Amino acid sequence: MNTKRFLTDYGPMFVIWLILIFLFGSLSDHFLSSRTLSTIAGQVPPLVLVCCGMTFILIVAGIDLSVGSVLAFCATLFCLLIARAEWAVGVAAIAAILAGGFFGLINGLFTVLLRVPSFIVTLGTLKIAFGMAMLISRSETLTVGMKLEPLISPLPGPGVPVSFIVAVLFVIAGQFVLSKTIYGRHLIAIGTNESAVRLAGVETTWKKISVFVVTGLLTGVAAIFFAARLGGANADSGNGFELSAIAAVVIGGTSLMGGRGSIVNSFLGVLIILTLDAGLAQVGADEWVKHVITGAVIILAVLLDVLRGGVLPGLAARIRNYKK
Image (cartoon, rainbow, N blue to C red; front, side, top):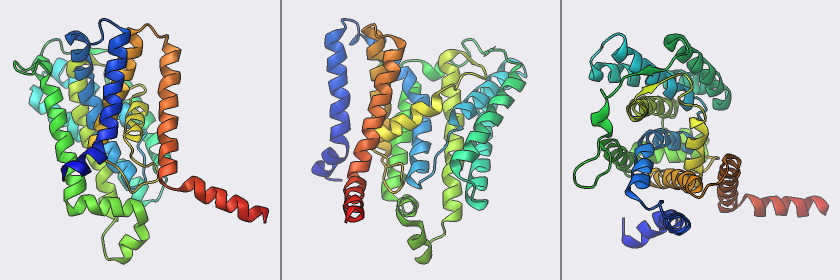
């Protein structure tokens, strides 16, 4: 990718993030402190990992509302296996990741093979995963103490957590798959016009199922970093997580109508969401103000997506024809 293309694709989002950094830095004396930036960096990995998968799903014109509850279940299962069953951390991590993949497989099979809208399917698995998290935790918070500290310890040089570096590596890998592989190009084509892709002889069924499985697996990985940061988990751990993930991906420019998206811009969308949240907290904004502003940003992002897709001009033309 040449420099001009790189700046065109990622420059606007990066500039918006920098504007927020400088804005809140000027409004609060403590925002640009290492403590605040380290806190933001620690919150990034779980959300970024989920957003990587969510980007793939939205690109094929699907959606996954279950990621918050699946994250809570996987994190609770992970902590349960370590704290009560005394499993090794590595083995418990594999179990948590596979559990996330299982939920993703269920979402994919029902959505693609049975043609149930992904909104409905994932709404159902949201409730199932939440209920199962309550069951295995007995509605209690399971703690693991400092056993997972190495996952969130800051590196000597840059001072950012290990989990943040891992998240960045996933972003790089995800963007490579999306833009440089046949699989990624097929996903974009499926989201743009699935019928045309089928007529061209490309298999679409298992590719669409795979994005749900990948999202489930990434949610399982995110659950590990989430539990490591908080030192434990419970059934409410993922409350609202799916909304934050969808918001970050949409703000990053991924189309809700499919066919367009970027893992890197979803990553920048996560930085914008978390910076906005931290900045508003630093300047003393009330909780309702944070929700209103975040919601307004999401609506603005969707409006820009609609404008880019040419929907409004087409609607205006239809209205003019109707009046005639």
